[in-house]
View (cartoon, rainbow, N blue to C red):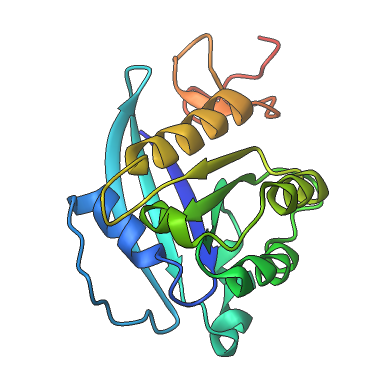
Length: 195
């Protein structure tokens, strides 16, 4: 089984918990209690006939809890960075989240998620701002979704899974398990890359 740790980050009330709940259990609640610190949920799926387990880490959006983030981002394969299309301040906070994610080696796949597209008529974020952010932080992909309607929710997680697996993992030619693309050793069959 391929196990992937995914960080879900963004300002308070951008819909992180709602996005995760919609994906994992296909439910949406109009009113949610804000996450205190960190929470997580697990979703199992198949990708290219391989079993995949996504551990989705839901981080509180308040600045008070951000000191916890760096300890939890360690070992993450991917990050969903969310902003609310109808809340420009949530977009401006993304710069702080990108500093916390760090990732100078580029090992964490990053998707910018424009949430609450059911509120498109109240949009406060321009395409130019999004493009500039994507270029500045080398974001792998931008997707728009709505946890309320369910629009593009599956696509968000399918896209991130595909980017991570296709971009950072390869199949061991001997045991057919998925291993890190930059690894010279398979921990499953204990063979070197050149054997």
